[in-house]
Structures are given as structure tokens and as C-alpha cells.
Image (tube, rainbow, N blue to C red; front, side, top):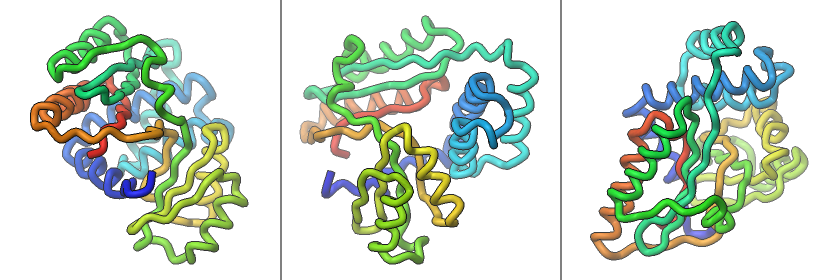
Length: 242
């Protein structure tokens, strides 16, 4: 993982998010609805909802929008019919791509995802065909400019809170957890008022693929752009070394 600036990628995603807030808010709204349906509308008793609320705030979703989403989901749980679906496939030169979606129409979503791969000269594979190349981890990124703690103190705090790994990058710190420990560690950071540039459960590639041919670069960008435009697509993970 060394040499890859996670924070640069986060900032890149944030910039894209700022240009497409409508889609981000739609995605988070669906996540709120599912979290409420699964665990109730009280964040105090629903760690998944607390995580989604934290994600919403990190994407600058207004508090009243968050509260409206929770109330709407609480009063309409029978109509929350989103399903979580995952697609795995290959981009150019064997790059691995995982697509996670929240949808109320699996046929529509499957067709759109397949179309994105096809137009980018990629292909959809079977479940498990590329996910073994990734590790599911809770990941917290702390911007050095926003953090007053010394690196050693932050590392000890993270590990004491239940984190598995701590690494220092040029501009940030990365804290990794097991998925089941993510909520507890994130909340410990929140209570300690340690600012988090990003906090989520993600899929981290074990190795990266470098693309040098212009045709390959155009193809993978085509796939990722089309997936990014699809409102059903929640997250996309890949091992392309951007």
C-alpha cells in the first residue's frame, strides 16, 4: 500500500462528490432507509445508522435533510424495498472492479452495470471472481493539517480503541480496522473530537495494476464514469493505480 496517497484519492472523490451532491445525497438517503429498516430510527440503538449519519455529515448533508430521511424511513418501513447487490468484473488488462449497488429494480441495475463494463471493453464475471484480490476493512483517514495529536499518540489511541493497523502517509494518517470493529473505533475518534477526513468500510486492493496504454486508460475511465453516473451504484472499488 505504500506509495499510494489514500488522502489524495479521498480528496479526488470529495471533489467529484461536490460536483454531484444530488447523487451522493440519493445514495446516502437509501442507506439511511435501509439502516432504519434493519435497526430502527434511534441512532443510540443502531450503530449502522450512526455510521450512515457520520457519512452523511462528512459529505455535508444538512442535519434537517438527515432527520427528514430518518423520519420518512421510520414511517414507511414497509415501502423500503431497496436491495443490496454486488457485481464483480474485469476492466482492461485484467484490472479488478467491484460494484456495490442499492436498487429497487435488479434487472435495471444489472443491465446498466453490464453496459458500463461493455462500453469500457470490460466484462462482468461471477461472484467471487475478483473479490479475493481485496480485503474488506474499516478505514479512517485523518488529515495531518487538521490533527493536533502527535503521530505516536494518535497511533496508540487508535490501537487502544480497537484498530488493527496504523500508517503514516505524507499528508495523512490511515487507520484500519476489522469491519466489525469499525463503528466502535470511529465513535471513539468522534468522542475524542479527532477530525476524520473520511471514515468507511471499504475494499482495499492487495495489489495494484498500472495501465500505460492510452486505450486502456480511456476504457477504464469510461467504465468508472458510467458507473459513477448511475444512481443505483453505491460504491465502486478497483485495483487500478490511478
